[in-house]
Length: 392
Image 1 (cartoon, rainbow, N blue to C red):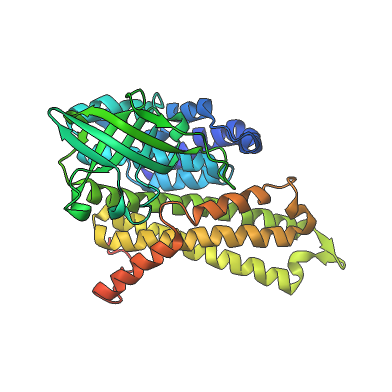
Image 2 (cartoon, rainbow, N blue to C red):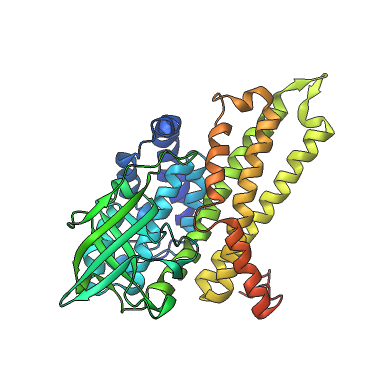
C-alpha cells in the first residue's frame, strides 16, 4: 500500500532521519577513507523498510512507487553519496526481477533483497560495451536444461559484496540487441569470479569490480522472462536508475550549497559577511536557481514514470541525470571556492563531494551519452516537452 503524504513525511523525518544522523553521518568520512562497504548499516536501513519502497507488499515491500525512494536517496546522499549509490543499486537489481521474473524467482529473491539478507549486483557493462549495450560480448549458450555463460563484466557496483548477479548476455549473436537475455546467477556458482575492488576517485564506500564468467552453468529457470527480452529490460531499468542517480546528485548538490551558504553568512571579511559581497552573493544565488530547476526536472521525471508514459520518461530521465549531476559537480567546486582554504581540507566534506560528484556524471551512462539520447529523441519527435503542469 502506497504511503500517504503524512506517512511519507513521518518515515523520512522519523526513523530515516535518525538513522542518517545517528548511524551514517558519524562514519561517512571513515568508510570513504577505508573504502569499506558498510554491510551492517546496509542491513540496518533494510530493517527500516528502505530497500522495499518500490516493491509489492506481497514480497515484503511498501509498493510505494518512486516518490519516497527519490526523497530517501536525496537525504542519504547529503551525508554519503557512496551509501546512496549502494541503495539505488539495490533497486536497480530488484526492478528486472519484478518486471520479468517468474513467480518462483520473485518469491525466492525479492524478499531477501528487501531484507538486506542478500546484496545484488547489476551486470551489464563490459570492456567492449558500456553505454553501447548492443555491443556486449558475454554469451549464454543453451545446453539442454542449462545455459553456459562466458564473458567479462566491468564496473559492477557492489560486486565484491554481492550474493546475486543480474547478468545480461547474448543468447543470439545474429539478432543484435534483440539477442540479449537476462539471467539470475548466485555468487557461489562455479566459474563466477569477482575481481579486486577498483580504487576509484570517489564513491569509495560503494565497491566496484570486474566479474568474470568462465563456463558458468545455470539452470534454464535462471532466465528472466524470455530469450531476447534483455535489452528492453536493461533500458527500462536504466531509465529508473538515472532518475535515482539524479536524486543522489540532488542530495549532494544541496549539501554543497548548504555548506557554502552557511559559511558565507558567518565568515566576515571587510566588515561584513562574505555573502553580502556581490560576487559571492550572486554565485550562491545562481546555485539556488539551478537547484530549484533541477528539483522540478526530477519531479517531472518521477511523474512520467509513475504515469506510465515511458517514452517521455526516458528523455526526462536523461535530462534529470545530466542536469543534476552537472549541478552536483558545479556546486561542490563553487562551494570549495567560497570556503577558500577550508574547501581544500577535510574539515568540511566538500573535497569528498567533489570526488563523489565526478562519479555521478559517469554512472548510468555518461552525460554525453544522455545528451545523445536526448538528441535522438529530438530528431525522432521534434520538440515535445511534457506539460510542466499536471492535469490532476
